[in-house]
Length: 253
Image (cartoon, rainbow, N blue to C red; front, side, top):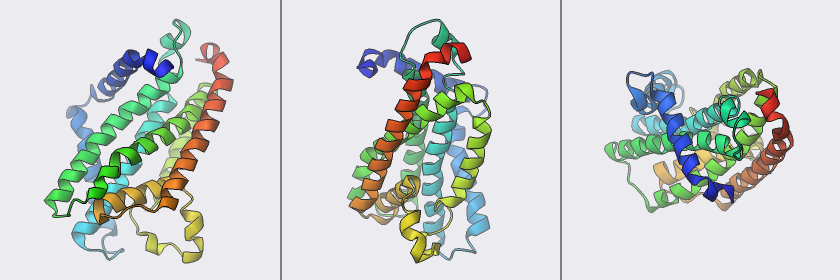
């Protein structure tokens, strides 16, 4: 399998993506930790009087949503340009081109792990009991990685031919931020629309993260099933699209 055969190259490209991302920043990698905290503070100030939850709980509620969303946002946006951004590896050498997408997603995965580590430290600092349910985190986050990789395969292959896609995707991400329960509780969704609302796998993932980190609850099997099914569907469609469009990558980049 190409993942094991090219694992060294995948590691090199992942580290390279992380270095490029932060090399021109004064704070460097620390920005990936400071950014969600600043965003949480702004959203907390704006929305804390709208949704009446306890101060500590609502701040952490928002932060879990932000950290979860940032993995989708940063991972998909970086992976979208992974083929176009490395034309030398596309036109001059032969490697499975999925490696370029995977390494971009993995760089976002590493950043996300560190953000969740900061989240856990804040949970302890705010006195939130750490439950055994946090042991589910590696499994859930790998599911998220799988889902995001499938989505990124489709985005990266389409972006080679349609360069306006990044603008469209940015708008969709902005809309998605408010369509997911990042700053508002699920209780604000009308009951008749809730089953449809929960078909969104990102909503389910955010809910799962809050269950295991904030509430110490096991996620429902139905919620996990939706994430798994969505991941399989996105990967299948993304890989099919990638395989179909890959033939002309060298001409288009």
